[in-house]
Image (cartoon, rainbow, N blue to C red; front, side, top):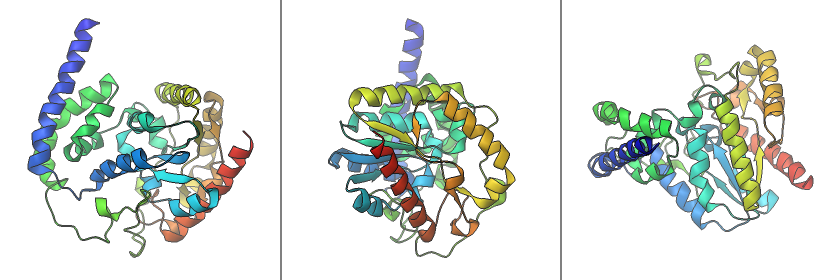
Length: 307
């Protein structure tokens, strides 16, 4: 056991030693993933009680947090950025900043429930290039090992990911496209691009027991902290629901049997017209995000009234 701990500590030290110089040499302060720094700072300073949304870019591109705040009369923080961080990282980074009376709404993309994706993918490495401090939120051996062993590979392709460039405000996919709630707004005035059907994220046939345990452990943590933990299904396209209706329904029934967390809606209620998606099967445009936010407001109101 001691040898294992020493190995993990060494890998963690390797990540830190590599990340710090790389940050100063290559870091692009306007990179999309650098918004993680702003979101954490927002979470720290936002007064409780507050609603905290966690998930991937389905939230970044899919919420009108100002509308939710005004309707529910609670502060709102949208932590959504990229599914590739993994659900474990998303949970661990918010834990220290939750207080009694807060509400956390977890909106995982389907990939979080398949295999070991909840521990993140290569996106975590790219995050550490622009926010080395995020290394402290890596809590599993798999996360640390994957990050440490992939640094050399990402050195080679760094110029295509976080190279220094000048990015004008008002565009999307960069740090300055987010508003004061953590919502991406840089795409709202852009022309709809449309999505590639091949990129649709269908639910897995089997639900990862690791992800289930991760969610249930966070549920226990939340109850002890006096925090209400809720889950919403992610927004999906009509095309996806039509093509995989039976598979989605089977997935939903399995999940609802496995977790004790209150799910505030049905997957069918989170289906939106294909025309409401901006550039991927998870990213909503202005009309879509407003419609989704209004639905979530009603779902949250009902869930709160049941407490």
